[in-house]
Image 1 (tube, rainbow, N blue to C red):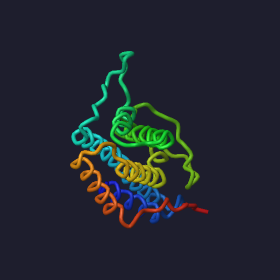
Image 2: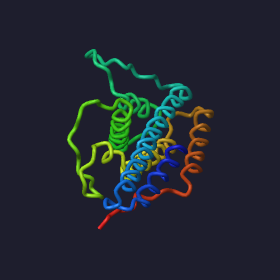
Image 3: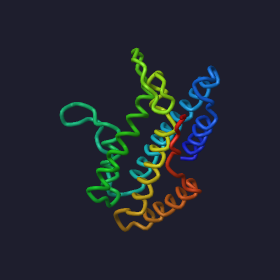
Image 4: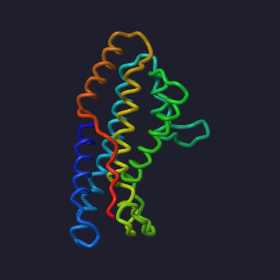
Amino acid sequence: MITAREELASARDARDANPGLDAGSEFDNAVLHEYRSAMICICAVAFTLEAFTNSVVARYPHVQRPSIVRSNGGQSSAAARHHQIWTGAFRLTNTNSANTKNTLKQIFALRNAAVHASADFVDPVGHPVFRVALEGRFVTYTVENATDAYMAAVDALEHLLGRPRGEAPEWLAWCAAMSTRLTTINSPPLTASTSYDTN
């Protein structure tokens, strides 16, 4: 999460420094900088969630790693596998379970689009802030989406670490230590992305 937070700050700096569409190459460079930092932030969040889940499997004695292959022969999604482990190791209400599943789906979809980028040409997409058509990746990997991914992951991890299942002292101590570490990394706590409007 340290890398994610650093890259999120870099994406915010790029947005704040963007002189606007009339600045030509300076605008292009600022958009590119924001895109790169936002994409790295989102991927770092996904990698953190993967590492967290693997640590849970290694430390919680009653959870099993789910099969990658579904009963119909297809492959289960990373989000579904992580969610299954989380619900086995932590106490989640139905609402919390649905929220964490949705968070995982969104973050891993963005990670997958970055790691397995399509080579197909796609039509330009309107940027909601700059009101210009850009290649889709520059609209997907923005400071807003990076902020949402980072904050959703922090919220999910804080929630999980505060509600471990079981009584094993080493497991409970690990959850408490990770909760403290997360608080330290996210200090001071980030707030929602500034509402950027170029008008």
